[in-house]
Image 1 (spheres, rainbow, N blue to C red):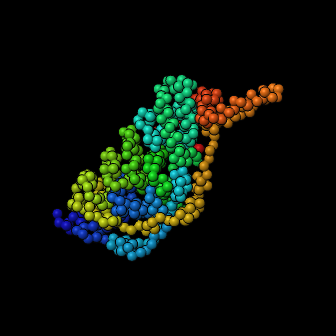
Image 2: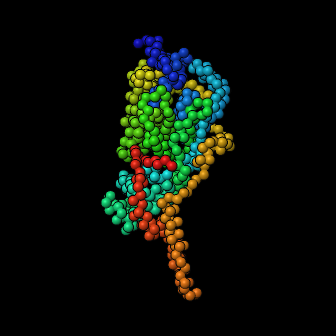
Image 3: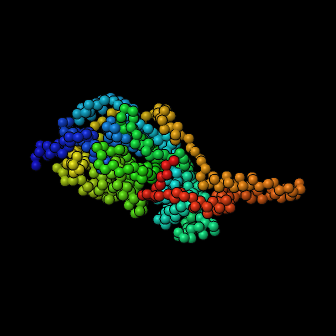
Length: 518
């Protein structure tokens, strides 16, 4: 096959007739061919994808480029901004020589443009609208990964959730969960669990210690209310463009287990709530899962199976998922097989492990006219090897591509400007202020106080008797709040009675997540 025939075949493979995203221009024989665009058909964006490459090769700008074009075509986008440099998507870019040069090389009509964006922050840590989840909806499987519990401890935590679900004890925040775990290790609680397997004191102790350590690291703010409604990720702006939801993660980038699992909760919650739509003309949302290797690291088989099933099935609900990581080997094979759209930036081959990863990456691509091992180590910043699904769902030819320049700001928006955008959001009032409503823990404490206040003051002679009445208060103050609650008769009474409440049992989906809309 001659070089001209090879380039012509590749060009034909990307000559789509319907709406598509423009990634860039073909690189062939050392030259950039601006008249041969490399594109992704818009309807194929819900067939999932992978953006991979070594640090510094341009992955973040690729995310920005794709997000902009999706927004322009009315598709909402979710971006996890781990390093804090994606907030610029909301502001027009700067027309410098480098940008203009790239635009000329790839045949791009570049116009500085900002896109409608919302900014979120986990638990309100950092710049953004606070994003929270209740313990109940987060579920035992995801929480076990955050707490780094082993398989046995995860199963025991699932037992705690099952008990709370069936008894109508809603777990809103961490103190609710602690109180239920402590109760189930008491004599009364062990009899409650007799018919569903029981919970060992040792395992409960590990769970309680993990919860305590988790709180001590300042993690309690991530759980509670108002809980984020993932339907807010599906909005479009008044001009019809899709809103780009940016989760700002720099403040928690040292807590990878936490933020990667929270991203999975968002995805699982969408899966749980969205209706089936089949093959639509365009996705309802495209979700970029950055630092994807953190999600799969040390994950149990059950956890990986749930990820695989979620990715496989959420396509029919109109959601496309792009995993972003360094090499394809970071993603399990069963998940990788479902990622039909691939943008592979340069890889390094400095060590034997690097060379092994390079060879493994090459094997994941269709046969091509390129020497991919040589090509992948020689790509420049902002260049990538691309293969996507055609409008008929078949893989396109592998194309070395010089990518377009994003039209929005390629860098972060400064903090004060970001804060102004957050305060101006229509969602700010709904989510900004944490609410500690009455849930299991608070109700018990309030009832116990009410019962004590309702008792008439004993008519005793002044002096010794009254002093004696005050004496027991000292040891009570020394007991922990959890001990006070689970040891109370009110807790035991409630635990027996709530099971009779009709319609309270929670149905859980993949990852044990649950949602009861309020």
